[in-house]
View 1 (tube, rainbow, N blue to C red):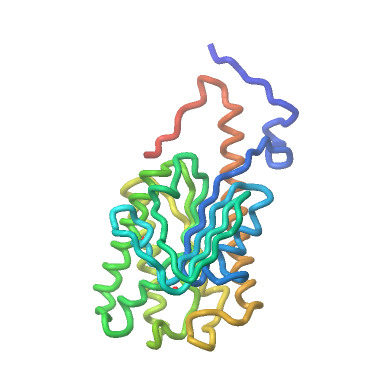
View 2 (cartoon, helix red, strand yellow; view 1 turned 120 degrees about the vertical axis):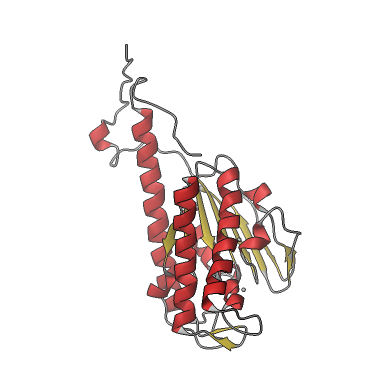
Length: 268
């Protein structure tokens, strides 16, 4: 016989209005577009969430998804590191070892925000340039290897991959619209493939919709207005993901015992 739990204060119809919420655990990992202080993406998303959730935000200049993988030797960024964590003093350094997922991706992680891909442009431009097909294959492989460890260590987490914004140059080499499209589509296809094969879902944010190519070095934004528009769009998507997860958790909590069942859920 099913045992019905009572609904404390909130009815199921009012869960969105009166949720029984807990602070979420959020991890933000990025490259130099996150390491910039104070307008880097990781720093800004941290400030947006810190009063409501427990957040660890890291930006490591020059990093690619592989830098965070535990099976890759530790790599020291030579051009800037930022770490912000709830209730701890921020750590900002010119040089620092990039931490690994084995110490960052905990089992109780609720949301991982991955701002990565800028430094994968080495597959598409410059001395190491590959054909578009080969570059796409390498980008997909790097993304899938990263997701494999993230999903293993934090199987119940949600994921948002913040794909690179529109840039003009990478490491002094021009980035064409075609290269930008190959980058986005390769990340997107990797996320779709991983979801289909492993059951772990990671949304994607197309940062090109928020930005135009910056001046200066062609990669990093000096126009804070443009940067803040990008960050605003990412924050809105983060809020929606956390809200949907909270609603799902509340609904699961108020199911009857016969209805409730455990979830089938299994890389500058």
